[in-house]
Amino acid sequence: FPALAQTTNRFYAKPNQVQTLFYLRPLSDKGAYGWLFRVYPEPWQVISQTVVEKNPDKKMVQDQVVYTSDERPSFATALQKIQEAVAV
Image (tube, rainbow, N blue to C red; front, side, top):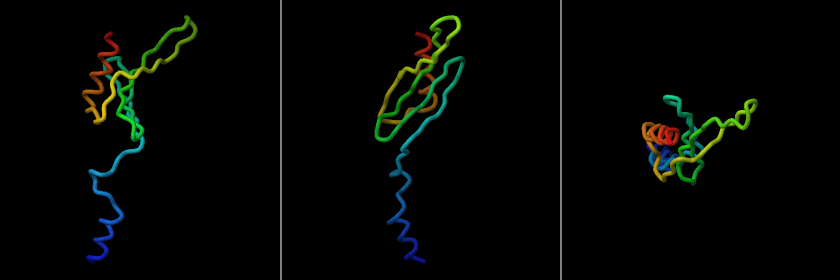
């Protein structure tokens, strides 16, 4: 069915042309927590989460963008950026 095969080229993008619209992946390692986040067309962001105590009865989670990039960082790079933020 050559005609059917040609329609796949018309209606389906090649794998390297497809962009993820929304990406959110939790990251955690050695007490460091965060997210790998992207909303197309914004850049990739590595977000670190830390617990902040306002008073003894109230704890809040504070999010901080620790790294941005136009290219998707590897899982190891994202974890490294979160660990560096926690160490500071």
